[in-house]
Image (tube, rainbow, N blue to C red):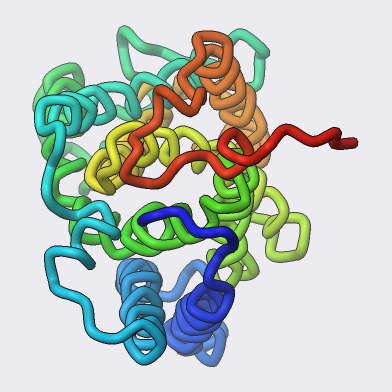
Length: 325
């Protein structure tokens, strides 16, 4: 989106209210049925929720249309980072890189979990995964070699990223397609942090049921906000770097597809690690995200000249320099 002197708070507010209200509305059956995480419709509800940010974008665009007049489809698609892909090579290769990189981040987190002694892993015999498979079938049922099953699981992560892409798009159109550029006039870092924080808060209908952290309380919501802020900085960087929402879509999809890596390599005799510490968005992953962000900062990847100009110049850089506290 083109930069302006200040964010369009009305359209941002409409987006925020619409996406949150719809997420609670869709999650309402889980609350009314009282089965929590054991509800058989949990997966369906969680998937449906992922499209509410996109509906929030539609509501925000309708508000903008009333205030700014009608804009062509090409303008809207460009502002949301959907089309065109320019430069195409940068966008495509960034998509490829994040499909590979997201599982690697999860794997690094597992290495740290093991190094800290929070869990024991068996990346050779896959004893924990084998035990899980045996418990899921009738006794004596022959199973393929567990190593082959694990290899298939790992090989299908890129495919999982693509399969997850429509659902991830439902979210990313809101967070990185609309909200991040809409907040861009505040500066790069305020926009990244605020959009990530709202992304985490939006998950509250599921987190308050114990989703992700088994902490059905405000602490669980704060954990989700923290994880989403840090991961959101990385996703947001791809948006700012390419002016496209697609790298964030595929990174989100690949991360979701690789969130179960720990279940493949955990040892049969391992304690079950706390998801607060060792979950895909737990405190260990916070550290992994923070290290990657630090590397990007130290290599100048968040400098204004490294970010795509179509999202507008950084207001902080383009404004006259004044003392700040």
